[in-house]
Image (cartoon, rainbow over all chains, first blue to last red; front, side, top):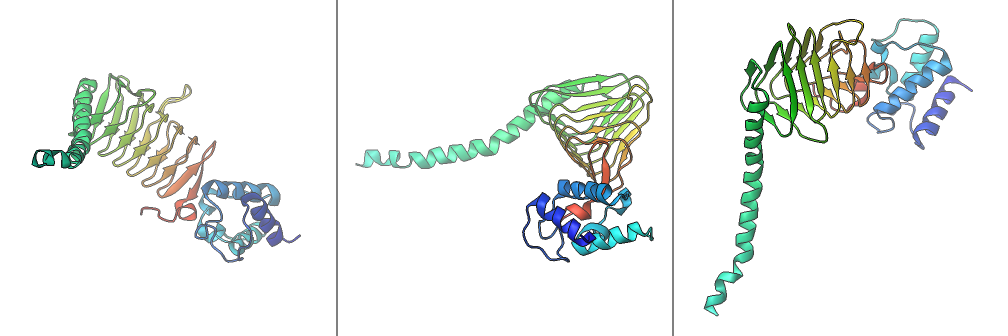
Length: 83
Length: 196
């Protein structure tokens, strides 16, 4: 399963959302609230073995599936992060 | 028939009296709360104007306590507690509001900014048994129910501390602190209106 599919499955199973686009804003679409965002962060850290710094918890990194996937890929390649 | 006319207007009079009561009652309660605050904070060196206590508060001031204008302390199932030990300083900025059961304790320095909102059962103390370090809570901070702010922490302006969080490290401005130990995330990530 690709990174995108793993994260999408987690979001659908955890937050009981049906259809959402890869570029939909979690915040503006009301898909994930603040507690949910903490769950997403914990999921990313556990399942992908990465450590998110507090300063990385910004919309540029986490506010859509596309952004999360890109962020995780950058993180796994240890490239410079936004924020 | 004419003698019964006045009775026709009774509901209108009742409605007027009800409206009058609704407009006067909050102001009367505020006035009583201000008198209570004046009594409760009699040992405080500097108390601002229009400080109101709607319920009991436990106040022990052996240091320097400075309270700003228009503070509100809400009453409830447990009194709030303000403690300032000898040589310590406890200051609260204007228009800050406290729900019941809030515990503020200063051994060295606790500073709360203006327009902050404190929910019920919050603990802010600058000594934890191991060390003492000043706490600073900047302006417009919202602390939710049951949060604990640990010694040495600075909470930045306009930030939010989530319910039940234990804040062990500094919180930048416009940030949501959540969890135990609290992690900081940008408010832009989780709030449509950050208030900034």
